[in-house]
Length: 144
Image (cartoon, rainbow, N blue to C red; front, side, top):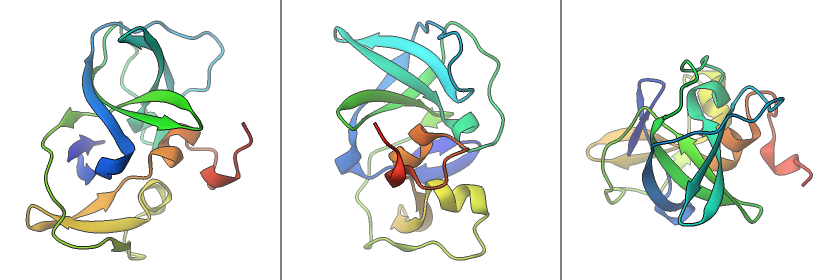
């Protein structure tokens, strides 16, 4: 479970390689606005995705360190998705189910499903949708 744009949400454990604290960030000139920069983890370069910006909720002011992030892999490349806070690792109490129309469109784009965890229903984040950024409504259609 993490907080992203002030909302408690969940990532599927199968999609998460690790959780880290980003201590240094190198900007990438000309990158899409939701790309916060690059960082290193165990001799690997990670592209850092500003989760708030990828959701279309603005971004935190750029700084040299970002804080908590969830490390995932997409199309063979490692990414760190910056979140407000990493809270906990817990077992889901149910299978995921589609999010209702009551969930706003930006959230539905990055979290089309809900899962019960810790006694509440949480949006289940699709990391590929955050990596794609706010301008790509169908991340599975991306061409590498």
